[in-house]
Length: 339
Image (cartoon, rainbow, N blue to C red; front, side, top):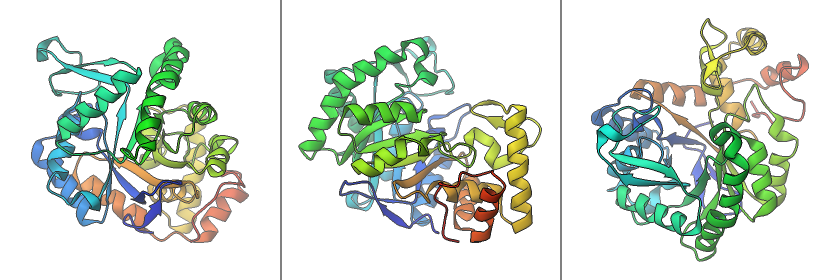
């Protein structure tokens, strides 16, 4: 399997590469990335054949979109697929007055949630202005999940379903955007949205991995039935499937609990038996499902990006996946790579 392998994105006319470039880190997530490193990662991804790029207004309060536009602006527009998101409006503000949250030294905009119809149209126009590009190929409604919104989630979801959804579906039906849907941290929210609207695009972060396959119960089968395409982010469960069960390993942005550490240690034992890298297995497992078109990985250095590319391309024998299933470490109904 190669990062440059292409997949049809659901029922849309879009084709994406099996590995995508996740642009959250270049928004200075947790710590700064300089301009040269950001551009070098885009160039390395392009040289590896990666042609799908995902960004959002949230990432660095616009900084990620600015850098994405700088990197892609002079590429031929028909040669790549670009996705961004709606749900937050950015307004200029003095830098000292802004709480950038997990981002560091980000762009001088204050972000606030707004899933209304009019705000959705404005958000798309603002994103295109920041990137200086003429169109989005895919647009996701961002963060209407419990993880982000807490007790406000039901109201945020309803606002998105009555406002943003109608705006995006109109733009898709008019041919302005190729595919539209949701970008969230919980498959249940994606499933509920697909039951409500004729969406064809989902970005699911961290909820279909070597550790978690509950999305096989309802969501992924419904996507297959309705012709919806899925992109997976967070395939390392925020760390532990890349580092292994080491002291301080992270799971869902916090210290991994004991039961997760124990399960990952068992998966690592099977990896050693078959001389398979745990991160390689984590990356390749995700895209084996027929409705999952791409895995989006965010990196901080060219070295990290190249490591992901190498993991994605590493041969893995079919017997490895069979062993995981035999030991109850992977669901029997989970599609796996052919080997």
